[in-house]
Image (cartoon, rainbow, N blue to C red):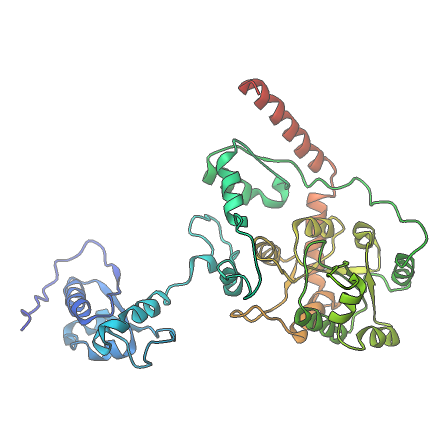
Length: 425
């Protein structure tokens, strides 16, 4: 029988709020519950965390202390192999206890899916669950993949092996992150500027399929067109392509969709892209006059500079985002590759420059309706005003004064010259 608790308080200097979270075994929970009673008797407030069934099975709290106790029920996540009613080691044979540990660990957010603790300023930038899982997925069955160093390991090796970090950015766009990067790595971080061409690239010769796309763009109303492009490296699956196409059609805004040539052994790139689009999609949008699909090269900077373009549906490659903001185009963000595109999307969504397309957190799938909803949010006359205003504000701050980029580049060159002179390299 446990000794009687002395409930005479020692007049604590400061009333504390103490969280007690023991391991899910009664050899741990009972002593920690006793400790919680002792602490409550000294005037401190206790939050005791455990599962509902375990809380019910604990000894009763002395009435004099009940006002200082708050029991917080935690529901274990479902783990394959763990019986549904198992909430402590007493409910399991020893061989199944590892499953209880997995469930216990699942009560804490995974490190990848919450902003790191070392970020000292408010931020929601983190990986989604489906993105974090893809870092650890094995290759598809039957697909031979050479053993190579992963992207994260390559990046880490480069960061650890260099003396200076030169980044394609500027303080006006990422001051907090630049300062933090220098603090974390303990080495100079030099912004080289956004490295954009001084003028949009020249128009191509008046021939080929781009001419028809350019003429179509010129017939659209000011700020009404959604420009859709996913860069030179991103490949969409048939499911992703289908849902994106249906979402664009459902949204009801005119769009210019530039598809890259995705060559596949045994077939032409155009044939492959045609297979990925929903049957009858191009015929329907042409009949309705709401969109155009262009396969092959297209001058992205020229398109983004065009007055009829009012938004950019992008995979969130850094270069594409920078080019969009150069012309004050709000973003409809659909990151595909996991290393940085999702983080870039969350960064600019957090700043109010656009909207990220909603996905299922578990598998990462998006639907045509979620694409349509995001397009409408950004392109709508009223709903999109705040995104257009923020994109224009960023354009003015970063690109409105050409001295910003010139100053970054001159500072970068000056740093290189001084570093070479001081280090004899």
